[in-house]
Amino acid sequence: MKFFIYCLTLFSTTFCFAQKNTNKPVRLLKSEIAVAAIDSFENTIKKDIANKLIAGGSYLLYQNGKILATNTIGASDASSNTPLKRTAIFRMASMTKPLASLALLLLQEDGLINLNDRLDQYIPAFSQPEVLDRMDTIHGVIVLRTHLAKNPITLRNLLTHTAGFAGSFYPKQRDLYFAATKNASNHDLEHYANQLARLPLDFEPGENWQYGPSINIAARVIEVVSGMSFNDFLTKRILEPMQMNDTKFYLDSVDAPRLTSLYTLDENGKMIMTDPGSVASKLISGPKVYYSASGGINSTLDDYLKFCVMILKNGMHENKMIAKPETIALMKLDQLPSNINAAFDMPSGRPDAGFTFGYQFIRREGAGSPLTEKTISWAGAYGTRFFIDPKRDAVGIYLTQNEEYGQVPSWIQFYDWMMKAL
Image (cartoon, rainbow, N blue to C red; front, side, top):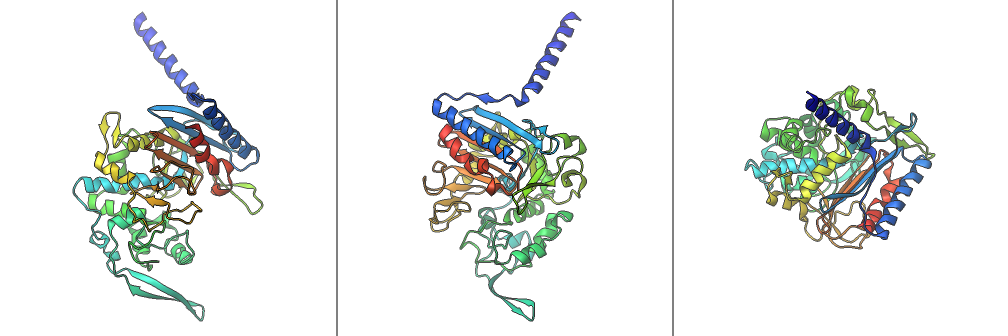
């Protein structure tokens, strides 16, 4: 009995210690340059907090099987000044897309689809896509001039953003896109796909690159083929096997204390809350029917690291194969012709960025991005971003919550400081 009590006490002490040290910073950096880089990045986060651009930020740098540096700085909610913890839940937005892309690739791995299949094999609403020639206005009424697309939309087009879909980032059909997808969160992916199919394409499928809503359509294909909701398929094939227990589309009230508050900046640059980190959040209190593969997942720093490391390790997670190496190789290989540029946030204007099945791909170093050649990366619209660097066996993740992330220096400079640290 004494031995049992001793073991129980030891277990409890160990568990409590682990819990208390959740926020403990990690520093395994070996050079002065690396230490200085991380110090500079952390100081930038602190300045952003002091300047009231963000409430807090959490980052992690991983290399060769170890976390070299990690820290959580600031608060999860600015008004209450609740300390930000390592276990905090963030809205990952477009960082959902790599998970969804792998989910579709798993169906190909299963032999149920081929990425060269026509989309209308699975969603008939896309059987006769039209391409927009021009948009006229007659007595205040919009008239679309179109022609039938010469190319069918393929599943490959979905994962590489080459389908030509209208979206929210481009002015050509932005207003029509918002009208067609209004109140999307009240409906399912089938409704979303049918609404998007009513709009013409911005260009011929396969002939250009335009970041948009195509991963949502990929998720609908997953539902049609698997007979499961996208949420259930993702959970069964990726999240549960990897024990990504904090990664989900919607939250329960028990998750509220860990949910970060979401902010934006008003016209005067003042930080204002758009969704609270509480039970009042739409992620907890709103409808839970729209599983947005384009941008609806919520996760934590450590959960998302698991996924990134699995990609880095060619599909393996703790001696368990999540996907075959040849499947993961497709996510690390540029899938675009060399004349098509996927440089969504790279200013050089040259075709320096490709796109894999899930990620932006750096074709050439020093051409608008500090990332290493063949590094894959992406970001989220609420102030999250990450990279996976196969050459250096490294992963970097930065999480904060501000919809105006382009005005947040720590978000902008994250890649620079991490590359210097490596």
